[in-house]
Amino acid sequence: AQSVTQLGSHVSVSEGALVLLRCNYSSSVPPYLFWYVQYPNQGLQLLLKYTTGATLVKGINGFEAEFKKSETSFHLTKPSAHMSDAAEYFCAVSLFGNEKLTFGTGTRLTIIP
Amino acid sequence: DAGVTQSPTHLIKTRGQQVTLRCSPKSGHDTVSWYQQALGQGPQFIFQYYEEEERQRGNFPDRFSGHQFPNYSSELNVNALLLGDSALYLCASILVQGGGVYNEQFFGPGTRLTVL
Image (cartoon, rainbow over all chains, first blue to last red; front, side, top):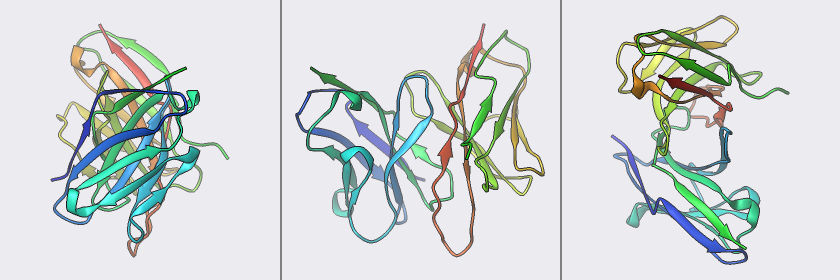
């Protein structure tokens, strides 16, 4: 069975500061890993994904994440936070890209002006 | 190109009633998954439909059932509603291809169900 742990249900950063959202996963086989963003009253939008190959993955809106197998981590980062980044972020894992997604409990990101 | 659409956007029911939620997948997609997102939680997988058959199922009781139509649209039915069924119900669609090809799942905006 797969699982995802997101450390920190709420994270606040100042505008222009580094954003770091943490995700650790558990999977019996090499996983597919995802970060999704959810704005209020909206569905989920894919930020980035790791399937195979390069472990540093770049996504939309300046976000990136690094797959570290030895640490079973897939942390999300952005060098400089923008007010528009305020949202809920979910890390997810699946055995294969087309299979069910197992989500973490989410991290609410607040940007301080 | 329309994305994934869901109806209705909001719904209020009382305990014991039955509800049907609807999802139209993104054009060209043949597989639909349903997720339940309780307040303050991550989405939980309910089930996935492919070729009008339930392909995978999460840990949800039989009160939750679904259907997929020949045009790939899908319905989620919940019987004997409980207060705990109050949640945002998300539909996701994908084109499933063989050979381990990965395709992105696209999510709809969800249906907010409130059970009183």
